[in-house]
Image 1 (cartoon, each protein chain N blue to C red):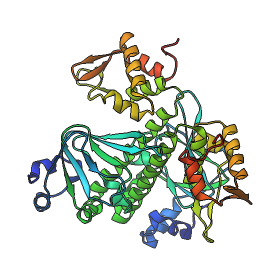
Image 2 (cartoon, rainbow over the protein chains, first blue to last red):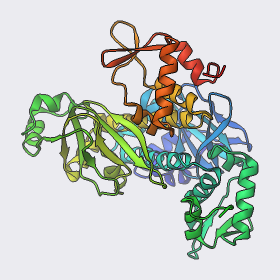
Image 3 (cartoon, chains in turn red, yellow):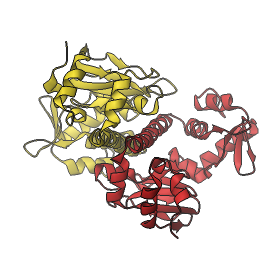
Image 4 (cartoon, helix red, strand yellow):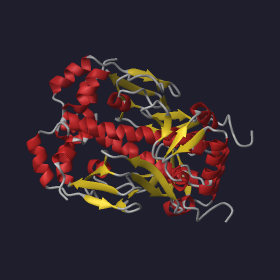
Amino acid sequence: MPILIPILQGLRLFDSLPVAQLTTLAQTLSERRVERREVVVKRGESALGLGFLIEGRLQTVDFTLDGREVGLDFIEEGDFFGELPLIDRQSAPEYVIAVAPSRVFFVDPDRARQLMFSSPAAAEAISLRLAQRLRRASRQRAVLALPSSFQRVCAQLALLTQKNGQGQVVIALPPTHQEIAIMVNTSRETVTRTLQFLQGLKVLARDGNALVVHQPDTLQEAADGKVSPTK
Amino acid sequence: MPILIPILQGLRLFDSLPVAQLTTLAQTLSERRVERREVVVKRGESALGLGFLIEGRLQTVDFTLDGREVGLDFIEEGDFFGELPLIDRQSAPEYVIAVAPSRVFFVDPDRARQLMFSSPAAAEAISLRLAQRLRRASRQRAVLALPSSFQRVCAQLALLTQKNGQGQVVIALPPTHQEIAIMVNTSRETVTRTLQFLQGLKVLARDGNALVVHQPDTLQEAADGKVSPTK
C-alpha cells in the first residue's frame, strides 16, 4: 500500500517539507505490515533507511554476551527509527522487534540522509530524538545500577508512568511481565511477585489494559529501597 | 585567557565556519582551567552553553537513587559536551567532572543553538556525537547486564581498548580502579582482584601509564564467562 500525504504530514520530521516534495517522496514509499514478534531490523545489518512507525508499537532489543534478551527502548506511533546507521554509517546496533501488529515504512538511505540534514528544522528533530533516547538510556542505566531486583522492577514501573487526560498516573501500555524482566535484568517470576506485592498494598491496580498507579509516591519509595516486601 | 582561532579551527564543530565568523566568536569566549575532581557541570542546572574540552579529560557521572556514584562516559580532548540541554531545553542530565587538570570553554546557549543547526555540516557533527554517545551507552548497558562482577570488569576493560600506532592493543588512559568500579557497579576491591588475576595470566601488563593487552582474545573470553578465577 502506498503512503498517503496526510500520514507523512503527521510525522514531525516531515512537517516542514513543502507538499510538492512530500508528493514526490510519497511515490517512492510503500507500507509494510508486521506481526507481533516479527523482526523489523536485524542487529548488524547495514542501513535499511530511515524507518517510520505509522501504527503499532516496536521495541529495540539486544542480547547479552551470554545470550539473554535485554529490552532497550520502545518506539511509539509517529516515531522514526534506524537513524543511527544513517548518521555514523555503521551497522544497526540492535534488533527492532514488533511488540504489537504494526505498520511501518522506510525512506531509502540516500534520500533519508538528505532529508535529515537538509533543513535546520529536520536536523533539530533528529537531534531531539537522539537526545530523548540518550536521556532514556541514562535513566534506564540508573535503574540497572539498583542493587535489588525488587527495586529495579519498581523503578522501571515508575519510569513507564505518565499522566492521562484525567490527571491519573497510569502505565498506558504496560509491557508484559517477561518484557519488564528483560528490561531490568531479572526473572519473570520476580516481576510477577513484585506486581502482586504492589497490588496488595493498593499502590497500583489494573484497569482494562492499563495499570493505574494510585500511590506514585509509594512506588518511588519502593524504587528507592524505603518500602520492600521484607520491611 | 581568550581562545585562539587555531584552537577553534581544530574543533570539528567549527571546521566549516569561515574565519571571519570564527574571529567574532573567539572574542566572546574565554578559557576556564579546572583541577582534577572539580565539577564542570552540575546535574539539574539549566544549559550553561556548549562546552569544549581543549585539553585534559572529563567524565560524566551520575548518582544512583541510593547515592552511589556511577561513571557514565569520558569526554576526550577536542570533544564538545553539554549539548543535550541545548537540544531539548531541559536541565543537565548528569555531572561533568574533570578526571585530569583540564582547559574548557563555553559558547553561550543562544549562539550555540544557532551554530549547531546553522549548516548541514554542523548538524551532522552534532548528530554524530549523539550517535556515538548512544552506541557507547548501549555497549555500557550490555556490560551492566552481565551476571558476575568479574565478567563486567573484563568486559569494561575490553570496551576501553584501542590499537596504538604500533598495532598493540592498549588501554591508553586507564581509569583508576575506583573509576572502573563505579562504571560497572562493583567494588574497588573486585576491580583490583580482577586486574591481578589478568596480570597473573599475562593477559595484560602495565607499561608506564598505559595498560597493554597482550591477549585480547582471552580478555574477551573472560568477559564472556569462558575464563574465570574459579575455573
